[in-house]
Length: 545
Image (cartoon, rainbow, N blue to C red):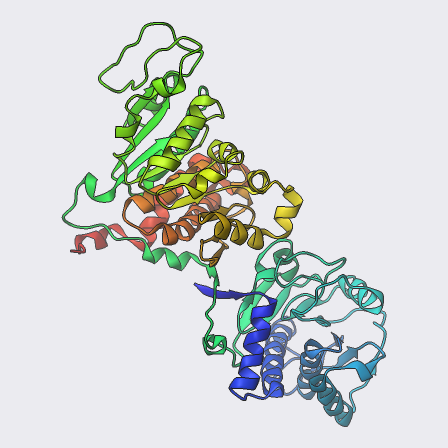
């Protein structure tokens, strides 16, 4: 996993490096500038190898650098000087009030002046080989106005290759939101650690390719603190528990999937099969009786337990081989009487999935409340389970075991009684706040899924693709999370790992189907391919004891 930071945390690390460790700020600035200049030089040589040899950087068109008055602008000035020293023609643009520049940027201005490199105050007409944005760094918190807005608008209109220094100007470093207008980069070279705003949309779309460069700030710069945000990558799937040589179906856990109202058998099927595909040993589905035949045909490996919904039953009760656990009741029957065997059933699983396609009727409410208040195993709460809990948030605080909630932004808006735009504008913060307040693991699903722990540690996932925006994709995720937890993986680790596996499986299949045609069942088929990539079958002959 890579460390991910917000603006304040990055500023503190920078301060700790210069004040506590004594590394001069200008040294950090020079290292940052060199890393960007090298990337620009590499690109220019690849584009025009005949005229961009080492020590001979002549170009048909110059490189444009727009520099602000803060230290980001100082980085830009140093980049411009380094390119100029290599022989590349550069045009540097800065606002006219140079007296307001930071001390480090004033030092870079003095150096630029001694080399005789001119500075302009307006973006000139014409095209450039490359356009470099060094106007603002991670400290920007308000919309761009005046000359800065004019600069960004003019730069975005140029055809040259566009590079952002640390973060595209106009992108909020914590949320990824666009503050009025923002620079549209092809490449962002950021320093020390990836910034949240570069990974969250819409910032991720403005950042283009992101390269993280070492400039002398590392984990030591947190001092007594510790990083609390991380970027999950596919390689992290290697931490999934390995299969044992001496094992049976009980070794890999039991998953109880409480899902599937009438005409919603698909949700139960997708979650249950995902648990099996991820490695769970046994899966039982508690669902409405009308789903019995469908599920038996779709997933014969699953154990079924069914109930009759209120209003659907006649007067007489029956039990078929103990698989029908409900009594047939008249329309005014007591919901508790539908589930006489529920207390024993809640003792059976290693982990529970509650909610996919469950509906929001009285039976569903009873099942959700019973699971949260009585079950002593981890619960993955999704879909209708979340819609029910949105009106009974106190149930989350009464849970007897870890709870993983998996809302999409619409469900999160209902849980927090806010709006979808509000949730999307502060995705990371919304997940962290809810997880801390209700002491749950919050998997907030969006184009970048965030997993927040009760401790407020957060994990941002980058696997997956927009083909996952399809019905049933979330049901597959709940099953994956349950499958990992059933095999003994700590829910705190199973949640971000499962999200990563879900996305990786979807991307695996999208290479064949394309994003348009990707369906939830395709993701199911991608799970074993990804798992076999990290735990190849021949290697199973060397079993872990």
